[in-house]
Amino acid sequence: MSETYVIAKDKSIRARVYARYCMAAYNRAKSCGKFEIKRVHRAFGLAFKELTTGETPDYQTTMKSCTCKDYQLGKRWNRGFCKHMIAKMIVRRAKDYMHDEHMKVIREKKAEEEKERKRLVAFQIELRRKALELG
Image (tube, rainbow, N blue to C red; front, side, top):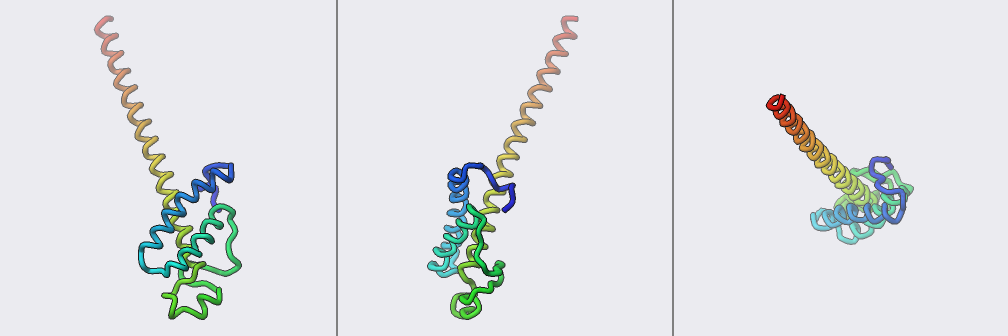
C-alpha cells in the first residue's frame, strides 16, 4: 500500500478514514447494477480488509480476471465477476476518492496561499505609495 494514502498512524483513525471512502465505492458498486449484490457485499469485506491491513487473498486477481474457482467455473452465470475482482475495483475506486479529496485540499490550500500573497503585495504597494506621499 502506498504511503500517499496513509492519513493517520493510529489504526482506528485510519480505519475510519478508509471506511468512508470504501463505503462510498461500495455504494457505487452496489447501485451500478453490473454486479450481483451478494458478491458486492462479500467484496466489501475483502476490500476493507485490504485497505486497512494490506492483506490480499491468495489469488492472482486483476480487475479483468482471477484465478479463484468461482471465477474459473462461473464465468457465464455470474456476469463475469467474482468477489475478488469486485473487491479490487472497490479498492481502486476508494483510492481514487482518497486521491481526489487529497488533491482538493491541496488546491484549496494553494488558493488560500495565493490570496494571502496578493493581499501582501497590495499592502506593500499601499505602503510604498504612502511613503512617497510623505517623503
